[in-house]
Image: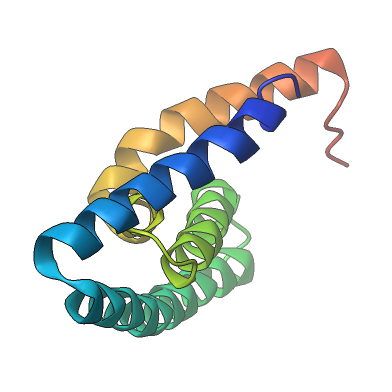
Length: 127
């Protein structure tokens, strides 16, 4: 949790810097349009990918399979959608990476390792 405070300071500062630089470089109106378009497009993509992940989760539960990857995909899609709706170009890039399957497949081993670490510490209990 010691990284949370610097994260809340550095990320908005970086987002603000990129937005100001973009406004200066391409103009205020195109920058605002890009923010609105990325928010709307992100909401659409998050809904589409989220419904796909929900269907996959239901299919896995219906066949009595472990839903591990489907749950991780759903959480990644949820956070990706939130990041895309937030204004800013850095959060949009991070959100897009979480929405698409290829980057999620590269991130998944780190998430699984983090979950196992928390389970060994007793902070996550699965019953």
